[in-house]
Structures are given as structure tokens and as C-alpha cells.
Length: 351
Image (cartoon, rainbow, N blue to C red; front, side):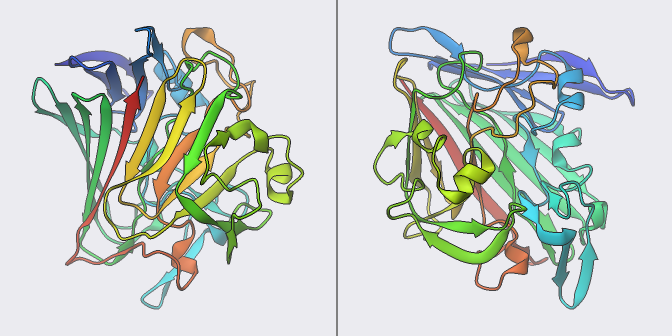
């Protein structure tokens, strides 16, 4: 079942709608046509207790005034592009620098700030909405008219699937993701100290002090980034390991082992108290693990007037390598007119 209702109105007068996806599973989801935002994700635990496991806001003003890309679709290119610049087919493109010297998550007005067209799809047991957006040639100074389609499906097994598609009329670069913040105890439950994480990754990108890759990969062996055995995420928060200490927590790109482009289980996030477990399946090569280190408590409060706070949630942003266009040998983010960008990420919830 899909229910549509008015959520708010943008300053330009455009109406923002909320689409509620429900079935007989233990999960329901609420998606906005503004930014393709996952506003709510209700999940039952082993005792049937329901909690909203994503951060977000009760009104459109919260999304307009707060940072953090809460729950939004990110594009054209997720993560950072160093110096806001890249070269493609001999042409240099200069992007808007919205993160110090770098361009972050699509620039000044990325996909997170667009009104997407929505069509209802799926079935009663697997309701879905299809969001489409056409990004004009040179929007945010990216070449090519990019046609993007994102399908959110609530599967009857209790999983939210996100399927991404994109085509272009000129060679361009694309790296799409979703930026939801997960706290499986409930977004209002406090820091994620009781959450464990497993990640199928043996290497991470080495970053500069501006959070952009320096071209190197680090073996996770004997580091706080080794999640090949499930462990508490919070073990790293107090670590003296240089990057963790400097960043105030995790904000790193994990490269999956034996990547072959097929849909695989790549990460498991679990609240040890409620028992809620989120399994992340993806056919993408990487995931950015971000533990909310830069969340600003002075930003507008979350739903039900809950204050924002550091380490209140974790993002699992499936993606290609950040700044890949500027590093030969990194994962491919180039899309040609004769090609189709396509990927799937599934967040499956167990109790």
C-alpha cells in the first residue's frame, strides 16, 4: 500500500509530498519527492516494538536549514572531488566548492535539493515508487544531460531496495548514493555505542586532512578499520589511530573484497540491545562509513524536537571510490552516451 500526503511547501512554491510504503512486513518507509529523502523507516524488534531508525525532520524547514544531507539521494557525484576540479576528454571542469577547497555531494545544489517526479509502482506486497530527475547539461558544471531514475521498493521480507539508473547524452561522471543516518535503537535513542558492525572489506582509502583520497589504499589488518569480524563501532571513537583521532570518528571509504559487480552481502549493522539488525547488500565496490562526527547540535532538532548530537547515527553510503575521476586505477565513474549506469543497494532488516 502507498499513501501520498502533502509534507510542506518550498519557498519557491513547489509542493513537497510524502509517500508512505507499507506491507505486511515488520518495516514501513516514508519517502519525500524533495531530494528523494527517506524521512522515516519504521522497524519492529524481536518483541514487536517499533522504532523509527533514521534521522530526519518533521517539516521541510528542517531539511532546508540543517546540514548533513539527511536521508537524501546524492548526485551527480557523491563524496568529495579534490579542488572542485576534474578533467574529462581533455576538458577541465571546475565545480562549486562547498567543502573547503573541494566539491562535496554534487555541489551547491545537488540531487538532494531537487524536486523529483514520482510514479507509483510495485504491488500490494512489494510497493514501490519510481523517482526521476533530468539534470541539464552543465548543471553544477557537469557535462551532459543526465536522466536519472531511482526506484525505492519495500519488499515483503522487510527490506528497502534502492535501484539506481542513469543515462547521458555526453560523456560525464556519475556516482550515486543515499545518505540516510541509521540508529537501530531509534533515532532518538542516544549515541550508537551499543551497535556492532561487520564490513566485508580488507582495504580503505587513505585520506588527506581535507578528507579526500591521497591515492593510496591502507590494509585494515591491525587497525581500528578491520571490521571483518563483528565488533562494537564505538571501539574506534576513542582510538588514538591518526585518522580516527583527527576525524572524531569514522568517515572512511571501505573497498570490498573480491569485488565482481554482483549483489552481495557487504555489511551488517546491529543494535545489541533491541536486536534490530540491518544487512546491507550492494553491487557497488565500496561503502563510506560515516559516524556523524560533524553533526551540529545547534542545527534544527530532529523529529519530535530531538536534539542533534555527535555519533547519534551511522551512514552506510554505498558508492564507487571517492574522487575516482582524479585517480587512475580507482573504480570507474565515467558514463558514456552508449552506456547505462545501473546499481542496486538493499537495506534488509531483521529482528
